Amino acid sequence: MSLLQRLRPGLVRTSLRERLRVSTGALTGICLTGFVSSLALGSTASVPMIVAPMGASAVLLFAAPASPLAQPWSIIGGNMVAALIGVTCAMLIPNVLIAAGIAIALAIAAMLVFNCLHPPSGAVALTAVLGGPAVHDAGYWFALSPIALNSVILLSVALLFNNVTGRRYPHLAPAAGQPSQKTSDPLPGHRIGPGESDIAAAIQDFDEVVPVSPDDLDLLFHKAQIRAFERQAGGVTCADVMSRDVLSVQTGASLKTVWRIFMTRHIKALPVTDDKGHLVGIVSLDDFLENSVLSGEGTLRLGFGHTLIASLRRQSLPRRVEEIMRRKVQSALPKTAISALVSPMVDQGIDQMPVVDGENRLIGIISQSDLLGALFQSKLDSVAAF
Image (tube, rainbow, N blue to C red; front, side):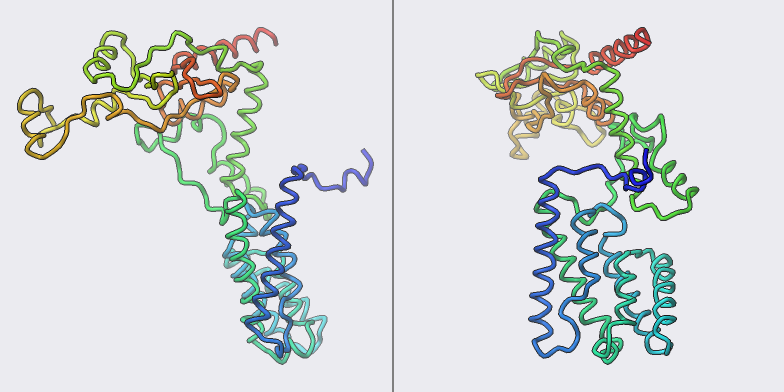
């Protein structure tokens, strides 16, 4: 590999759609920032309507919105801190070159202390020192106008544009998932192998600024694990392992009938379809328990007493399956790789995963036992091939 090739950054190429999204976002952000700033400052303002560092901020806000360096506190805090330090250095240090160097050094140190590192803020500190008479005459007002004004407008555009175009911003850390039993244990899929705390510790040992958050690295690591498993599993899909003789009920079925199926067939969940076979819901033993009427001591109220109490409370007792079923159902397609079922069925505790065709007609079902057997068999096959 030539030296020139080794010097190229190891960025993964993005799609044409993403490149157009980023460019459009930067265009929109800079134009609106300049337009709104000109309205706010007026045509007689001596300072620039929009400062050059905002171009660098736009690169981060629209091209890398997940980066810790592009978060709201980074741009607002970083630019304000850098502007105040730059103005102070310009006032106190006569030598421009020395003032510029000290401003950059102090700005970086302060941003690291306040956890608001934003690379374009280094240019803000330089602008405060090298910006010329208009910037120097503005003094500390320069930190508010145009720096704070430009930063707030550009950030507002980024908040709106990124979320409208499908990019989560600000990039908040996802809420920690819990096992279906709501215990304090990590999710089953995260109990083996490095977790977010391990990644954070490794970054700390690395002792350099890494422009990716630990939760994003954790997500990327698990996605890589899934892709590696898909490769090792040899492309096993839901169609390969699903049960095709599907036990289901139609809407309108009585709860008595559904309960009898649960008791005689020893199942935990039952898909519900309409009269054309389209999946419309799923009912489980948990749904029966959640819709039971309990006394203050936690015992079931049954029979005539149950009916009388519900009547006095003006409650209508559920009688049909559609009255207690869950209508939001996670399902899979026949071509879905079984590796995609690991997270919902293991971490979220889904017992049965319905498989539907392109028109949402129920054609199969995969249980946790089916998934476990498929994973075990694929592992045996990979070992045998090795």
